[in-house]
Length: 72
Image 1: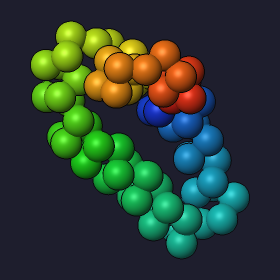
Image 2 (image 1 turned 180 degrees about the vertical axis):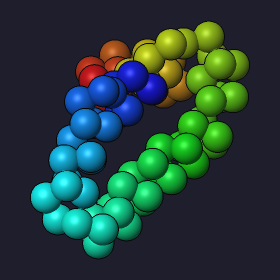
Image 3 (image 1 turned 60 degrees about the vertical axis):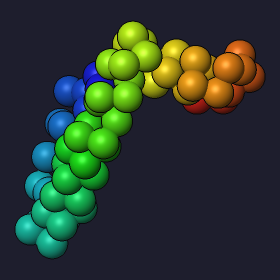
């Protein structure tokens, strides 16, 4: 989660709104909504596998170090 929704991302999104006005709010809502949807859909699976990062989860799920490397 920290990889996708870092402080830099949040500050960057605020900067987009500042520079482009309220029409950029659609982008911010989509970004945040997508993140929440991903969290809801994947959190239980990641927890079930006992992994803490997305690359570890992908590597364990597909049993491949190459998949883990590609997800990183």
